[in-house]
Length: 177
Image (cartoon, rainbow, N blue to C red; front, side):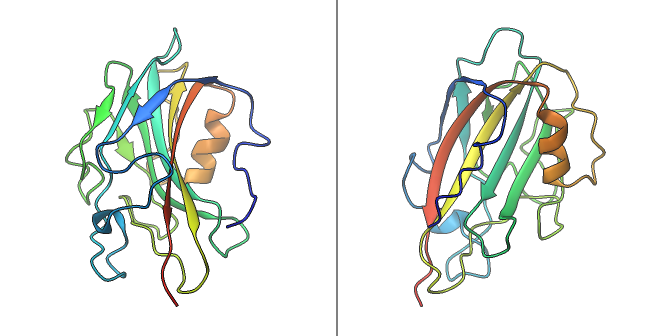
């Protein structure tokens, strides 16, 4: 696991709370949240529930990012934009191929595998433990204004001037050699 801090150069933001009935902060992903390329993996997005977002929040975005992937740029597993401010929970499996569990108006951007859905963890065998930053971003706009085929990195860049708060849950995964 590297010391790479994905928030080190981002603007400061108020903290609020995100929890999950799927995985605890600092715990390993269950098999369902692993990639279908890993034995037992099913690419099921986690349940997420958040509270305490800053006043003035007009929408949310959710991202799942692995800074420990051996790419030089990490790996984006999931990105959801334009979640209405009245929504404070996503059910497990919301990030399927159709986004069936997402609220009206929200959409999934293509991840680094170029699929507009959640893709589970799959660290290379023997690469050691990886961290997965599950982040709910509270934004000061109703719509972040990125196209549905934008990359998660472009979403992050576009959000940087609109983030009021950030709720972070970190999961882990490791694949034996």
